[in-house]
Each structure stands twice: as C-alpha cells, then as structure tokens.
Image (cartoon, rainbow, N blue to C red; front, top):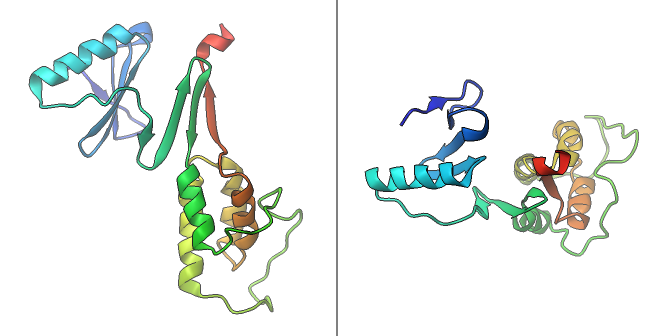
Length: 176
C-alpha cells in the first residue's frame, strides 16, 4: 500500500507528501485516517474495504477515551467524562473548584505532618491525573510535582472546575 512507518511514533504510518499526504494511526484493530485531500482519504478507505472487512464509522468523535470535536476552525481533544470520574474517585464531587491546579510557590516535604492518606488510593489518583494530562497540559507540572508527595486534592478541585478544558488545534486555513 506504500506506507512508511513514522520514525517518531511506531503506530503512525504515512503515504505521500505535501497535499497528497495520508496519515494512518493504528491501535489494535482501529484506524484513524487523515489527509489533506478528502479524495485521498476516500480512495484509501475503498482500498482497505477491498482488502479487509472494514466498517467506516465516519468522522472521528471518540478514540481511546478521548472526545474529539471537529469543526471548520479546528479540532479539540477533551476527556470530560474521564475528568468527572477522577473527581468522583477523589470524593470531591461537591467541592469548591480551585482556580489553579497548584498553589503559587508551593513547598512540599516528605516530613509533612498532614493526615494519613491511603497510599493505594493516592497512587490511583496520581495515575488517573497522569492519563488526564494527555489532553490537559495545564496539569502536567502540578501532577509531576505532587506525584512525589501526598497532595493531589488541590489539582482535583481545579479539574472539578475545568471539566470541559482540552487541547485545541486550529485549522491551518486560519493562517493562510
């Protein structure tokens, strides 16, 4: 089919260049297909259907737990439902949301005199927040910082107030 594997990501394959480029992301038996020209994408789908039993689910709207919202202005990636589950897991559903994920100039110590925390629950929350960072780079520093300590409640209170935040990639046509 003429694809080359990306040297940067093993699950991404490319065929063609420039205006004829076609990218295919592969995860187990799911494909995400994108290209500059709709005709190239359609031709590849027909090529695949001729070779394999395949279902075309239309424009991407949900993939690996990530909501995908597309319009003419760009693409937004969010994990709203997952963020809500993290807030529920922490028992902070009715909390007062924080405006920032971490206090300014926060100093944490391993010798802290705070209340005892369930280490398993803490690791579960930190792991959940790390997965949320895929679409929430605003959480990356604070999650990395507190993962060495027992201090995630502030971040989760921030998540509770920003459930719909995500990554936005503007369309290239906005800049041409």
